[in-house]
Amino acid sequence: MSVVNSGTRPSLSPGQRPGSPRKRQRGPRLDITLAGQSKLAPYLFSAPAIVTVSLLLAYPVLYGLYNSLFRAPSLGAPEEFVGLENYSDMFADPAFWHALVRSAVFVFGCLILGLILGLFFAFALNRVIRQLRFLRAITIAPYIISNVAAAVMFRLVFNSDFGLLNRTIEFFGFDGPGWLSNGTLAMVVVIFCQVWTDLPLTILLLLAGLQTIDTSYLDAARVDGATGWKRAWHLSIPLISPQIVISTVWLSYSTLTGLGVVLALTGGGPLKATQTLPMEMYSTAFTDLEMNEALAIASFILILNALLTLVYVTVARRYGTVE
Amino acid sequence: MSAQTRSRSQRTPGERFVAAVRRRLRRTGIWVVLAFLAVWTIFPILLTLSISFKTRADVSADPGFIPSNPTLQGYASVLAQEGFRSAFINSLVVGLGTSVLTLALAVPAAYAFVRFRFRGRHLLLLFTLLPRLIPGLGLMVPLYRLAVWLGAIDQLLTLIVAFTGTVLPLAVWLLVGFFQHVPRELEEAAMVDGAALPKRVRYVVLPLALPAMITIGVLAFREAWNEFNLVLALTSSPGSRTLPYELFLMTQTTGFQNNPGQAAFAIMTIIPFIFVYLRIERFVVGGITSGAVK
Image (cartoon, rainbow over all chains, first blue to last red; front, side):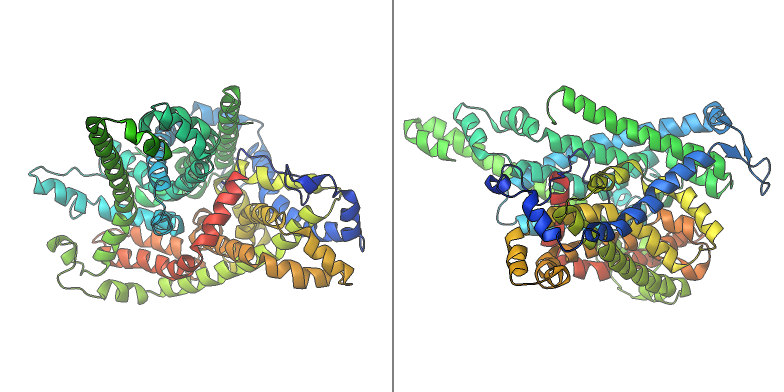
């Protein structure tokens, strides 16, 4: 949720499509006549939504940032202002650095796997016409499944005793590994599960981009003798780079701040091998009950997420793919 | 294709053969990828479905994909749980409540953003930027503390309000995109006929906006139905949890795991939604992607 509109510019002109020929003839005049009856109407209409969003999104984050500057000397004691001490302690804590590295592996793994699979699937879907609706409906199935349910499914698939995967491996005469008891493999499983839940939106985004490509470009390239791979690499991928950037932003947002899959699949284990930053925040807050310290971690994640988004958009702009 | 037909007559038979093979290979390749896509998506679901119909012993004893002694024990064990039943009802209430509240707030706001010029229209940007920067994760601790402070822990209304806050930006954004495409002329015609604002909205705007509203209602419902982080933070007692939390707790039990039960639970959280979803899949896909590429 709330992921799909990144990297785009909201159009603030009301009721106007850019490039519409009627744009100039219509103007403020009609706005005034439509709005004429009451100057208050727009404020009354929009105020509840603006207030709700401010109270439930903006305020909690400011509250969190502010409260991360306090600390209770002991559990239940009144909180005292400690400045940035929560942050300096956080940076001095090896557990934090461990979680940061685990998060980096997790986010990077999900980005690579998600983008590669997303591109392959989107290109293939783009070539299908008649069965597209059916295939798209299948594609989107994970979108309606909660993170926890997805994690339960992956626990069953990767179960080392009866999971079908190990059954298959045993069939070929090998011993299947304990997927969730080995640190490296657990990370792999968590990455696969997270990508499984995030892929539908990635595919839809990329597919929407591919479907806007003017086929005359591709035809021209075909006349010039470009093979399918070359057309994809030199034409389609640059043409859908805005959608690739949006997918990257969304995937890294979703994985950097993703808690449900990891918590329900491995709980950060085995031996903290999948203890990502959100897991670290969760256990600090709700296991150790150190709320202010958890708020420092949460604030760090929010800032990191904003910085990453900024980096993607800047890089994309530098290479002239996104306006 | 047009390029190939144009040059076909100039090709030697050998070239034509190579081109035909390549075309066939390409088509096969596409179907291989699509088959992989279907397996990737469906396999975990089918496997879960298969396990949900096995007995606890058969999960390891009977390796077949199709259970040899299909049983409803898994489902029965879940339905017998007090936690499941109350969580199911809670999820339903919270989902519907979130849908209704989201629509009630988003429709007027989006209409105002599209149809009126007023100070504060730039706040529309708020709706596009904030959710990018503020994930549910960042809200867990602050909302938990605020709810404790307000004495609002464990209440369904708290969940509804919190979920509405997270869904609202997308809802407004999608509706703005939709209202921009409702022809202004229709409303002007109604106005010429003497319809005041409430009547225009009631008889012109809302009927036209119905598909968009259904889409947003479903998206909001899905969000509330599946949300896990905030439920984790905002509920603590058994009677007030929603389905994901209850399922999570079921996986946390130690000892002999009730695997068919977990599988059945997961399936039952999906089933009610699949029917709604399949009927309006087209709207939803259109909604998601139009929000994305606009």
